[in-house]
Image (cartoon, rainbow, N blue to C red):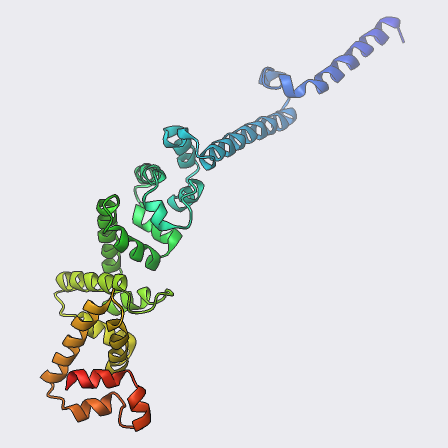
Length: 298
């Protein structure tokens, strides 16, 4: 082989090695025409991988800023990134670290950011909009939200927001054809029991709305009787509720309504005695809470 050929081959080999070592840095600058069709596919994959990595790093960085409570989270950069990735309201609530205490969340400045994002989300997803109340309910639970809003409605700094959210929540219940008994069962699912003033107020407010919207004639007394299972059991719970200062007034009101119902049916004391199951055993009757119910009725 001629010396000139050897030199040319060596030079070519050096160029190939140089090309391989610098592929990542120069692949973007080379015109597509210098590659054949087989080489073009790996190059595109390399570029796509690079773009995906940069995009992922950028998203993770913005999410990190949000979790750290950075002031820029209220701007459009982070929110636009979340919107680009179709992050829903519940996920944003978590990213903003609003926490598991809804009472604290209702007073947090981050709630404004969540509301802003939900508006942006709805502008993009016009066919599947969401709302703040639906987002809160999905995260905290329907009953927890209802009770927290009833309390927050009586606080000056959260009164306006809580009032609006309560209306929105009850409107959703109406659209789902929830009855008063349904709401009673919902509120009774927690650890606070049947008779808390908050539960009774929520239930009473919903029954009034239900009657207006449905032209119905439901009452709190009838709803409680159905939900609890019997007038006997209701009467017993009212005796307990009367002993609690926070529920005494409402319990007296309900007991009076129960007595009026019995009087309208012309039920005599001995009939009530049997209905309350006070006639089975004298000793048991003397320790039965409903003995007080019978005495008050007489």
